[in-house]
Length: 226
Image (cartoon, rainbow, N blue to C red; front, side, top):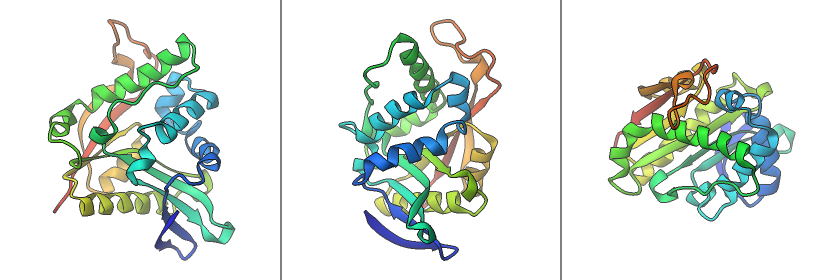
């Protein structure tokens, strides 16, 4: 794992995550997002579902870690315990991810609802995807353990990703934000909402799978300066 030597408050450092210690990473990732990701709560994803999804995203053939666009925040005062993460990817390089194996029809439908909704809200980015790899940075996930919130860690993780994107020549960054706190974080970093979807009104094959989910998902975009 490569040390970025970027201290926050003297005790928190940002590491680029390479996946060498992947197995301990999975429960850490789930602890951050389980019960704290509004869309996953609406759909009813269990910890087992999130384990499947996490291993597919970060351990599959076209996994996100292979692009070296993920970072972890660690508390050096607690034996470098991981406390936050940002996971990004180039969606053109990633391509279409395969659905996790071993799930029944109901489970697969839950994941299909999430992926379909996120694809729909991010539709305005499709024209930029056509420009090829190295154009759009997708901020897929960003989170911090509850006891470390409010320390600016998420902001530092996002800045690390944006700096790397600029250095690589990316032109745009985007993220699908499912909570007001996430939108505020991205707005502070210069992102703007360019599209949104009401989850309760989202339809698949003529039906609304989540009619009682009072949640809006916003597509946040930032134009990266050269």
